Image (cartoon, rainbow, N blue to C red; front, side):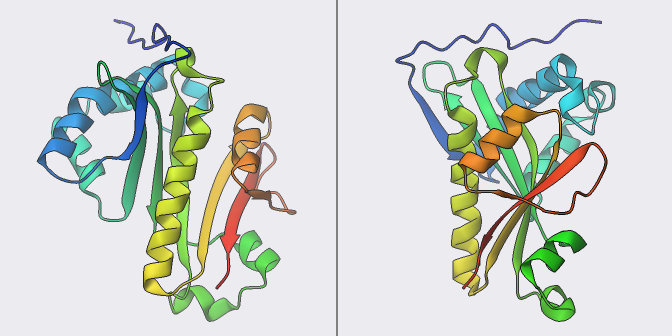
Length: 204
């Protein structure tokens, strides 16, 4: 099996990059297929323990599968892109209209009908990854901050409080530090033996 690798991406200290939302349009689809898809597959192959999905599953998927991911109206993918060659250095996807975890409801004191009446704009963080050669440069934090800002703006436009949640393996200290620096709090009651739930809550 051919190994896909983006670990040779070693940005200079003065590297130029931009953080952007991949738009669900023709240029966005092209970017998703030509740059994000290989970035994602490399991540799955090089660091399989980071993901619930697998390289074997996704490498066999046709382009329509990848288009569907980008065109999902409930998902937004943010990336840090190296300006000189278009390589993706870091990414995060946030997905809305997923159930608010019970532990989060309890800790925030949300009523049972709070979610049922769609009074909360809830986003779940997925597919967070930074290429090995681009780590320890703050890219993951900047991409996460861009995603959180977008989620907040959507919530504000709808007149709702904003809730962002993420599940992190307990042994992934780097990820936990990233989220805590972005303002996330650890849920007092764990969701599982090997994972921690973190959340970012902005009430109105």
